[in-house]
Amino acid sequence: MVGARKILRKARVARIRYTRAIDTAIGRFTEPAAAFFLVAEVLILITGVVSRYVFHHAIVWTDEVATIVMLWLSMFGAVIAWRRGEHMRLTALARAIGGRASQWFDAVVAVIVGGFALEMLPAAQKLFVLDLNDATAVLNIPRSWIIAAIVVGMALLLVLSVVRLLEIDRGIALRVLAASVVVVAAMFFMRPYLATLGNINLVIFFFFVVGGAIAIGVPIAFAFGFGTLSYIVFATKIPTQVVVSRMDEGASNIVLLAIPMFILLGYLIVSAGIAKRLVNALAALVGHLRGGLGIVLVFAMYVVSGISGSKTADMAAVAPVLFPEMRRRGADPRDLVAMLASAGAMAETIPPSLVLIIIGSVTGVSIGALFTAGLMPALLAAFCLLVVILVRSRGDNLELAKRATRKEIFAALIAAIPGFALPLLIRGAVLGGVATATEVSTVGIFYTLLIGAFVHRELTWSQCYPLLRETAALTGAIMLIIATATAMGWALTQSGFAQGLTEALGHAPGGAAGFMALSVVLFIVLGSVLEGIPAVVLFGPLLFPIAKAYGIDEVQYAMVAVLGMGIGLFAPPLGFGYYAACALGKTSPDDAMSRMVPYLASIVVATVIVAAVPWFSTGFLPHER
Image (cartoon, rainbow, N blue to C red; front, side, top):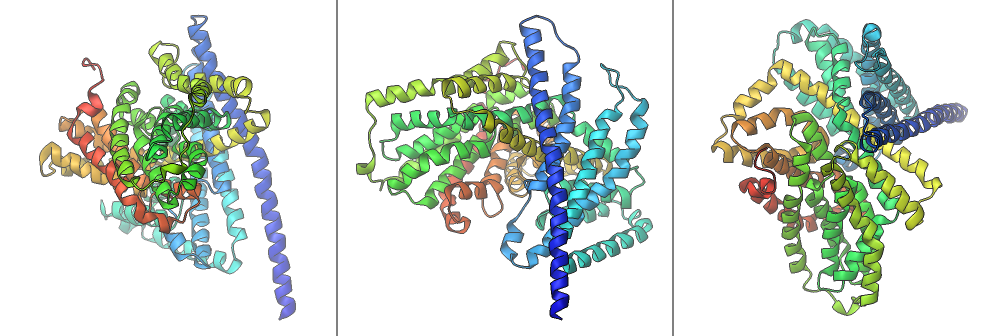
């Protein structure tokens, strides 16, 4: 008996050694390749800017090449994110259960991700063959070059899923696999019956399958993709390559090129020391006042958000600078986390917000208008949040607050000038016609590289590769969500769900006001369950036309949507942003949860005001829109 256990233990150790070797080999291949694609993307876009603005000659192929490179970057980034466990997912249930039961969840997650990749591979290969004779518009190269990215990406995801499954307890893995085979066989047997159920299939596949997968911790992108493909395979006669085509279409929007660029810019401003100097300058000005560091936190999030476009990067830039001093003054760590999370929700509309970019890409609303409109709702939310902070700071011990001297203030402001100039540079480049909203991030990237390397001297070559890798992983996670959500939205439209939703919401009680109130609640829930990006891609094309039919300005509706989803994103117990804030504040999520109520309520008040008063969203937009 003891000998058998030793043999099994040795076999498990050997199996894990081989699986880790495979995992490492995939990482050594995909990470440098993704970094290369990201650098190529930056160079392609900046080449277009320089050629057009400096030499007055537009290069016609840059957009097409950048789009092709973007898909390869997205697929390799998705592989890196899956390998590193960084895809967006709901973890509340897994955290609540814990223990050995979590291994069952892990096994199911690995099977579903692997099943999605396995379903996608033959579909992508069929589309690859079909597109061999279909050339691109400008370079006249086969479109198969583009689809090949999906083929390679899905093959790597499948291998990694098998690796994950082999690392789990063998008994659990075999039971989950056996159950999966039985379920799939039963679904194939029931296909004729499922075809007669009509829209009941929507409940089966998009509520139970997708919802159940998300609940147990399957990354949202894979839950969307698995549910959509399962619906297509078992409930329709639509060829599966259509799903691949829709995913390609969703990820190939030229506007989405801004996503990896602004993510990279967000990481760079932290590494270059720009964010730290901005926070220090604000602290020197008002940090000595009652509630002063809370004021600094809110306005630091406001200023930094206007540069980075990444909320995780925003919080990571602000918290390490402010939290030690706030704790020294006696602030409760739970309040610090609540303030940080609520400030993150407040800053969701500040350009260059990735959610605003994606709203513009999927709904057709002008991104320039969204960028202009986003500042005032965030300022209103910041004011409401500051009221709560000042009321709750009446017990601050000001004896511990050191007032900066004029010399210190002057030195802090001088050091922060490059940071304050960056948002002006970005906005000026767009308004001056130097770069489009898609390209302008590259201007910010080169500016930040110069400041970090030659002015602050905090950015080194050794930091660049990790930044590229992190950017690629986050880009892949976001872009795969956009791709699968686009395919899922198309399937829902084809099924008639979109028309039914339009008819139902088109008769909402209370007319436009009732629809707006319902939308606020809906977006908070969606932001909590799905996070902002997948919710926007999935429901934006459905809800924005309804809002327009009610006479609601689309820009105002976008502000309400982003604020609502921001509240959901940072609201416990499901909001991912809340747990990120707890991690940065080194505070237990259970301890900080009760402290969120007054701070997050202030953002809810601001959202209601923005929903009721259009001026806060449209007051600074040109009337001839």
